[in-house]
Length: 303
Image (cartoon, rainbow, N blue to C red):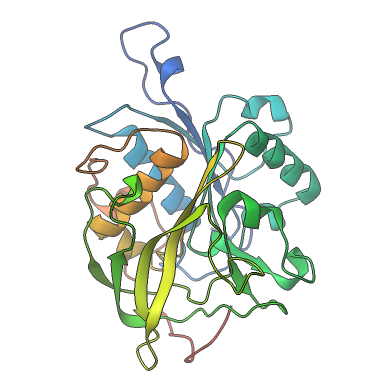
């Protein structure tokens, strides 16, 4: 597979229909957008990660089932987007910024946000580069999702660094996204010093820290590594800056936080035990590699 190109065309459609006619039409629908990635096998794995999230959403055992579609090419007809409750992005930076006709895609997404659609970004899909944003860091994603990973930007310097051990702690224990998962420690690349706006880089009033980590280890502070926003248009946004390694999808607490966040972004109810879903061998999602051998970036490196 050429990891510098798009990861395919539509790779999934609706879940298997039940015996009741039209039952699938009543399920919430999620559109998962797998953007391009140039990372080595075992890292990012955007196509496999998208298939994995689809599987989890369509195999929920304790609340409403969900239909999830996976695409790597933005639909030509914006009317085809009308039935989706939330958009989920995975890729190297916010995928619309690397797709053809970026302006059209942002316009389509803006229309979806205006009607209250949710938005979720996973790991590097939370990222925007200097050429993507205004001089002061403004971008629609800041308003849609409440913050972003500023990579190579002039207005703000976020940090991408692989940490051998990062302890991820629920920050807002009463938030629905934090139901059912507990603190965990992981070897991954949780981005730190993420950007939340010009007001001293403080989270806006409608943005909630979902998870924090005491990083970097040599000078630790409570870094926000997952956050959620409730927008004025009624829509919801969720971001989490992991996982970098595909193997870390095995981490149940991280995975539950992500699936909770997607369902919450779509307006779904999160049970007190969190979303329960079955996940077997990661190889079933056809990654390029499950256990990669990769070089760690130099300390304090940025993408």
